[in-house]
Length: 51
Ligand SMILES: [Zn+2]
Image 1 (cartoon, rainbow, N blue to C red):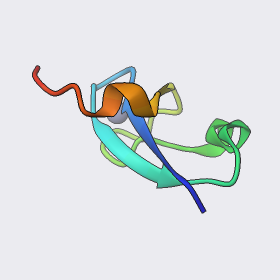
Image 2 (image 1 turned 90 degrees about the vertical axis):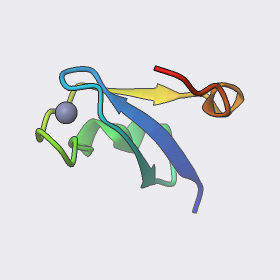
Image 3 (image 1 turned 30 degrees about the vertical axis):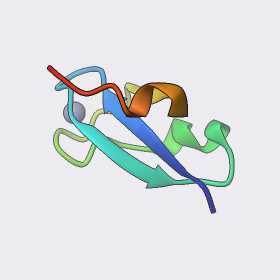
Image 4 (image 1 turned 90 degrees about the horizontal axis):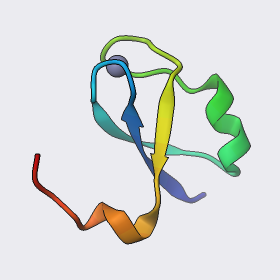
């Protein structure tokens, strides 16, 4: 099962979730604030730190 790096739009929390497909992100909630507004970070951008 692949892992997706996600960023919460509301609080900016970065976390990873294990999903079969990105479409399952609709039911994913932020572990910090519980928001469902989540952005998926493409693997190419994961190594780009900072912030
Ligand atoms: Zn959040």
